[in-house]
Image 1 (cartoon, rainbow, N blue to C red):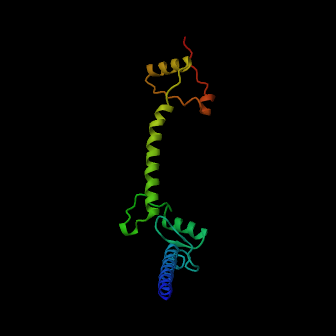
Image 2: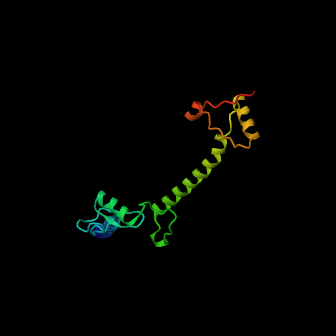
Image 3: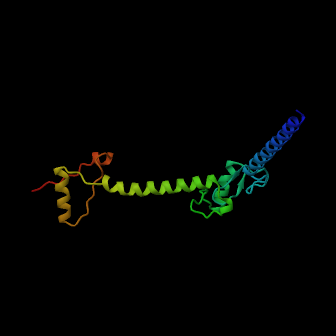
Length: 160
């Protein structure tokens, strides 16, 4: 009975030390996620709350962010194709890379669909107008029928 109790206390102390280690690791991760406690890079008077995604400059308020963009000419947009070292590569970086590739694929797909949308209409009025324009070396392109300007277009070609 005593040996079981000793082993039980050993197991409990091992579990408690593992729980303490995991708590310390979580606190360490939480402290890494927070912005470093430095002053605003623009006004220098208050503690920084924000960091510019493009140049990593610290700022304390929206006014300081706007002033930073105006003074430095910074766009405030993160460089999506910037190199990330393997030691700094984490799940968020992987997710950002995946989203970047998805956006690129969506953009490429949209470029091929534009050709399908821009096909000229097949009305007799449009055909005559395009044929006459071709005769006088004018490149004529029509808007898709769903566009408001296309519906409002009242261009006519009258044959004599």
